[in-house]
Image (cartoon, rainbow, N blue to C red; front, side, top):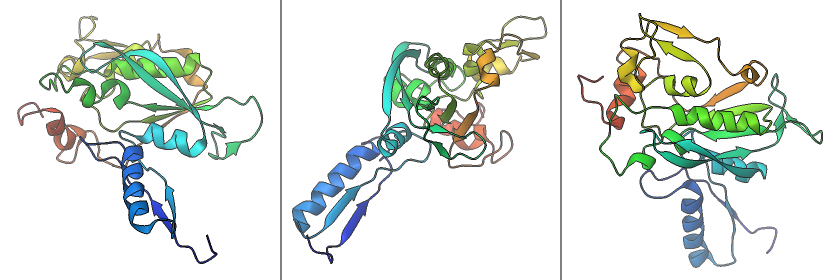
Length: 239
């Protein structure tokens, strides 16, 4: 390969409903090699936007590792979910810390627990789908000694505003009579009080960052329910 050999960077996101970014990059690179042969250097760099495939992309880029933990899907069914571990980071500057033994960054892809693909075998239930399993992944990261959590929130089947996730972390969501509200978005209609006294104390010292590519507010015509609710099966009345 000479100094003049061109470099081709293949950097796709995932193709929703088809294949992940890693598989897409591999397929595109194979096609290019079949045409270009050895006349070009082809680099496969899968990308992601905070949705499906973000964990794989970051683990590959950082040379990290993946661990499996027990969690639940958006309908409360048991499943196995992944936590990626990359290098440690300075919480103030986001710079990578090179010191041996430093607490690593845990990468959590919320869709591994509450994602649409995990409930594709059932009709969508936007008012009942619940993010409890995401909280289970966070607990797994805390148990593993994470020094920081990077929470990638795309691709979910839920509209509960993270209520289920908070319940898994020890928060109680109560109605006006002091009773726990129902899981999912349906229960939020009766929400009167958020009791954080039982919140896992480790979260006070472990920073959590959110990875996403949108800036939609919670409510209004550009709000999360109006924009993303229909993707999860919400009819106009549900929104």
